[in-house]
Image (cartoon, rainbow, N blue to C red):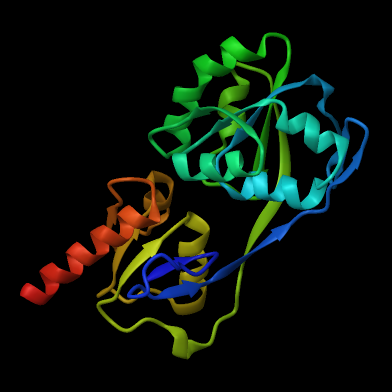
Length: 237
């Protein structure tokens, strides 16, 4: 079972449980300025974009659609955490210049830093992020390059009916730390469950009693393949 923001539709044999919802935060556009709940951001001093989730470019597209400032942002090089997020950014028209291969915030920071240093010169990187994140990428990078942050979206847990709780011995795939937290908020944790984390940040969000593995690749397809392998081992036993 895939637990996350959206139903998993690539495999009809795999169940989905949507435990949280994405809320885009209000952004306004005027010329090269973005108005946010935190203040006004002038993008003329921005030289690159940082995305650690596909929700970041989606939030910009949703909130700034058909504006001059969005066109400016799409002309800048984008540095993206993982291949799946990069594909979303590219499909929306962003210029992907670098894609991380390790799909974890702290490791991505080390990967991307030399590329940002070569690219930015006197300008800043704009880190488009969720309201809450597992790793403070902006703070880490700020010690080495100029970084500004734009909080563009937030994850909120849904209140779900108890009858949706997965049965004992389920294998649960969590796409993000927020998905795990929303699941536990609704159902607690049955010790017979097995968990699969899409990446290192999600794995680190698990409590110590959770029996968990990390997907061999940062994709739901790889996570599903691992879950099926685990399920077949259980059946053989």
